[in-house]
Every structure is written in structure tokens, then in C-alpha cells.
Length: 325
Image (cartoon, rainbow, N blue to C red; front, side, top):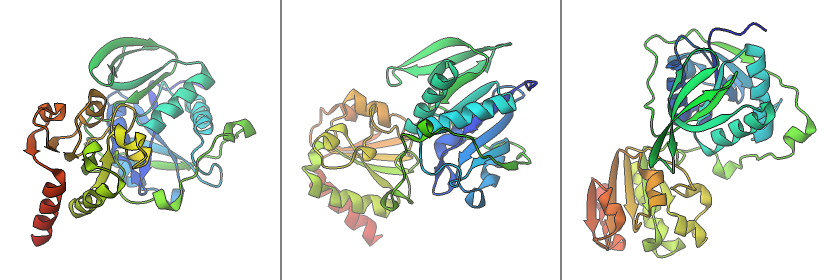
């Protein structure tokens, strides 16, 4: 196979059938890699894929792996598929969004191919031959590291809060290819299938509004007003680590260094002190409003606005005002 001047594969995750915001950011960075042919890889049903959205972000081809070939999320199998497509297309780089899934799949891809992988990159610049210059987040985004990757195929993920999703000036004429991979039984040993209860609706990583709750909520029952407020604002509920540690809410709702990094238009933090691990997850929010009884809570230093008061009084008042309007 003769290698193209620059062919970039981008793993695209879906949110309610459309490309996830984090993946659109990854496609935006992929277009910055010089005169590159950007090709998307999607694990979905071809009939339900919004290919036009991928074309708007510069993808010239999309390889679709349908459920009939690989049902559910199997990280090693997904890595194996990317390895095969990288070889078949002569790709010079493979990238994904820096989500839990994107980082896991590319880590498997690196293990399968023996290639190095760099996570949470903000800038990637080809430097001739098999060299790429990188800038990436370290220490939960507190530091930026400049590095050089030397590899025949560069593997990296894109920091979800560092690249704005920008559509291409001229949409690509996209071609859809249904790809049927050859997989070994061991590749499917670990597999997760999304339950109907977890399907649909906005995800924490892509929501435009997140209403966060911490220890100050008081317990599992205290989240009902937050759920109501999030519904009125068209958002979702997120939580701090202590909430999941206490078993009040599931880990998938955790915002933070060991949870999900969010990039909403508005993050309303209720009863959250603001430990550095939590700030690492919400620092990408455009606006932060904190509700806390403690005027010295660390999160107030990061908030655009703060309400010093009892969330059990403030939240119902907000809900009432929104319903009145």
C-alpha cells in the first residue's frame, strides 16, 4: 500500500445519532494537519448515520461498522478495527476525542500496533517525515507540555475543552463505506451494551447546561430539585466525587479529573466546595455560577457569579421563577 501524503483517521462518537460535540472538535483539529484527507470511523447503523454532519466538518469518507458486524462497545475490538483501517488506508495519524472511550480505544490501538499514543492534545503539527510536534494537557490540564512524537503512524486524542468545533468553509463530498472487520474471539471478550435506560437525551459531556450537586445537597433525595431545575433549563445533572463515593448518584454523572470533563455554556454548582480535581472537570465551562453557604469555598474563585445561601432555598426559588416565566 502506497501511503497518502496525509491521511487522517478520526474515531467519531455519537450522541443521539449525531456526531458528539467532542468528536466535532477532534475533526476540527484533524483538518489542521496540513493538506490532510480526513476520514471518519463510526460504529453505528449506516441507515441512521448523519453523514452530512461529518461532511460539514471536512470528512471526505466515513467507514461505518454496523451492529451486525460488531454490536456494543468492545474497546479492544474497536482498536483492532482502527488498526486494520489505518493499514488499509495508509493513514499517517489516527485520532479521537479525549473522552473516556476515545482514550481507552486509542490505548488499545497503541498496544495492538506497538505505536506510542499521546492523550489530551491541544495542538498537533506535522514536522516532516514521521514526526509530529504536540502540545498536550498534563496534570489534569494544569500544565501544558510540548513534546515530539516520532512514529510511522501518530496516535493521539484531542482535549475536549481546548479546541472549538468549527465547520469547514466548504463541506466535503463524503463517501460512505460499510466496513466489515475480521475479529478474533479474544477481541470481543470485554464488551458493554448500552441499556435502554441510558440511551437518548443529552449526555454530560455534550450538555449545554449542567446543574451540579455536591455534599451540600444532603443525600439522594436532595437531588430532586436539581433534576427539576436541569429539566427546565434543558440540561443534565452532574455531581462531585463525594456524591458518587457516598453512593448517592452513579459514577457516570461525576464531573472531575476521574469523571467527565464538561464544556457547557452554563455550569450551576450547588453545594460543591470545588476541590482541584473537580475544577479540572468543569474548567471548560463558559460560565460558572456557584451556590454555597461558605463564602470561602474554593469554587467561588472560579465562578463568574456566586450566591451565598442555602441551596435548599435558592433552587426552589429559581424553579418557581422559571415556571412563572
